[in-house]
Image (tube, rainbow, N blue to C red; front, side, top):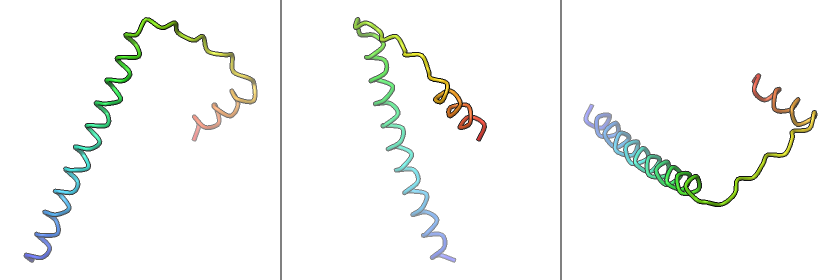
Length: 63
């Protein structure tokens, strides 16, 4: 019983560490997005999607 408890506590600690790492990565990405959005550089106009690309995108969205 103690072994199971220790294993579960260890797993919980590892999961919390992973969660902290993920949260830090998300914060870094959000900062980068905010900086990019705040920059005065011109925005690129998106190129029109080809029919084949549109069909492929629609098929992926249905999955």
